[in-house]
Image (cartoon, rainbow, N blue to C red; front, side, top):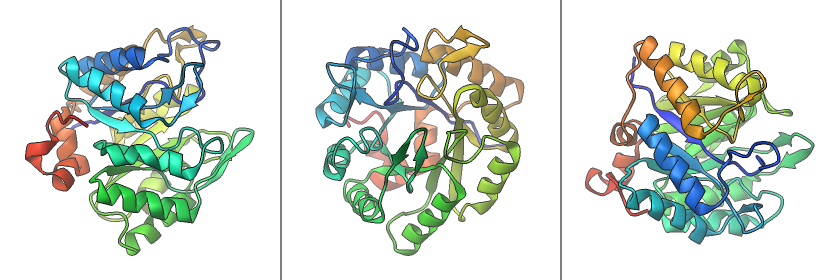
Length: 285
């Protein structure tokens, strides 16, 4: 099977210090844990940033600061900037703006869904504009899927020429209001993907590890991290993002899935194809 791409979602927009003291909040903390995840075997780190009050932010300079700190530490890990943080709080323009700094990868939440007690809104016009901005700035979209209807949204954007292969899908399962974290649901979603697709799966809370293991067995890729799950075991907080990455790397070794390096992941998900191989290794942005 293909080498495994491990993604680490370090912070998220909602995980708080009241829930766990181990979630990184400042740019320095996020960068330090991103580097630790890379050393543990992650090829991609998914980044949310927070303001001085610990609340979700879309400030491009904060994303850039994290990226610059990671690069200064000698890491070539792929930086995946979130465009989903702040939905419903800030404008669509503010959510889109960081893409103009040309990160290698950015999240592309491919539709709207209930999100716990709220609604996560990603309108067709927002997605069309976001896709155009990503194409202009050579950003690889991580197409995030919360239910099967979002795969159909992606197909429409593909038909419209706004999403280009190879497609990089991230299934987000087990969210209250979205698709359940079950083997049947994951198999259905994988079977629904268009040709030229690579896929990864993350899941919320107790579902994280079982879905990661499913991905290992099915030949897909996997995301872990404190954004999605703050526990290492029953009532046992994970002490870092790297601890969760290390476990996933050990499991991958046990089932014969060698880990993809960041450069190998760039090749698999199309970063090299979009940006050119010479400019894709340990880029500034």
